[in-house]
Image 1 (tube, helix red, strand yellow):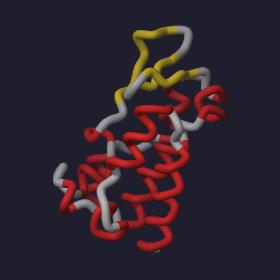
Image 2 (tube, helix red, strand yellow):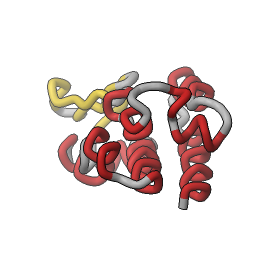
Image 3 (spheres, one colour):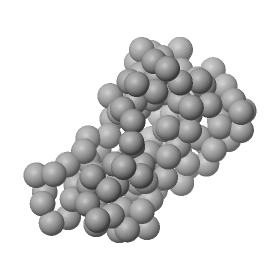
Image 4 (cartoon, helix red, strand yellow):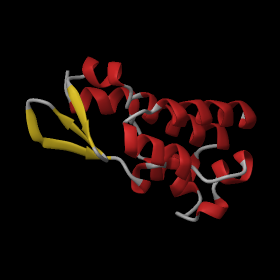
Length: 123
């Protein structure tokens, strides 16, 4: 397994492509799948680790993938404007709280839970 296998499973299409052509359901699903890929079991499965915003292949630290607003389909669909984001308009707040929990603790579950709720709303 590798960073490429992780990307094939959890980030097969760039966020900008999904944002341009996808439905709200496609956009939310893309973001949810990426966050599911950040779970400890999925990182281990592919032999990658998480270092802050980076997903890094454990045996080659030069092979890395940055996860930020540039790789977020929700951000790209909203032209990086939180007030225009599907998350904000449908959940009633920005993703900052869930993202802050992740940055402080490494826990992806709050974001996964909220994105799962959002997916139900837009489906």
